[in-house]
Image (cartoon, rainbow, N blue to C red; front, side, top):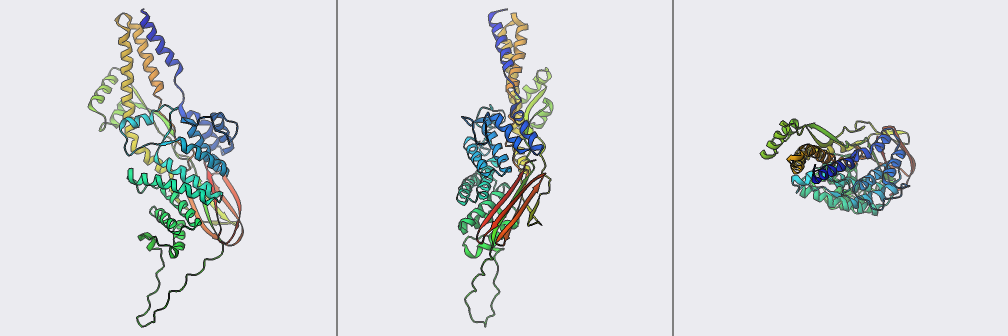
Length: 460
């Protein structure tokens, strides 16, 4: 056996021995298990262990790749524990470390890089995740009664909103409903009536939400922003008879004393990504209309020779607890909530858009992997056929391990979110929010002209 042949075999076997891991899905197994058991504190401990930090306030020296996503998961769990200041910090750190996947201008190779990327690289978030970073952080600021901070997140959300509307051509992306409602509430509290009306109007594009209608109806007499939706909410004064003298319109009635209270409950968790394996024949059938004739022929030939049998790619696992029924009580009395966004449905819809490209990318990479192995076999030479076969198999195995699908995603997003807006008289009031075995009790001191936002994220 020649020195060159031995070198090929040694390099291939060494690579095979040092690569391969369970991917992000394996890193977050303890996190998901803890949340499934209703133990968010243990979930944060699992995240901190993966981040190799000592406390909820600490960060790795460099927040990149998987670590950025773990910080984002920790932000959600901190929020579920009502640790809003810590959650706010986590959201802001993660937001700077995460790019958004450009689905508006993507070529197939970009999709392939996204779903088979090196986990040390910068995580490419789908648009709905970037929208929810600013939305859920706005909720943190409102919980802390920091209106100016909430407005900063609202303006960041507006930038993302324009991208989704103008570049992705998705003006009706339902994720925007919750963000628009919270932004409208924040601008209302700041006294910026027209901006508040604009956001309430935007929320109403997704449904006749009472929380948005109540806010908009109260502001219409004081603002100039109008739309067909808002016009339907404006009270119409009775027409005066022709002979009646013209009189000045009556002054608007004073608002009742009390505070505006917004309740927000998220429950369940969205589907997370898992690795999937399907037979090559089925994969070719699924992408028959997209794969090039050349690649289809190559894949079919390789399958016929028994060189390839399976295709690996990421897919979505089932969701968690999305059909729960949250309960909200004020001073012991139940209040009716309304669902404002089904996040799990939007996650599935977003994945459906690129699923075909994901499978296609997996097939083309599989072809390249086998071709690399065949090249190593040829390099070993006819005199070293046996060592060439071993080296070829080792290289193909190595590339299979390296080609582990990227199962990274924001796993701690609530599956659904419900809301309720109330006007409470001055005084102390007991708020109780319940969902999926989680419970939050909060006493608020309602003051005239004041506000309170009380939320619960039951990530189970």
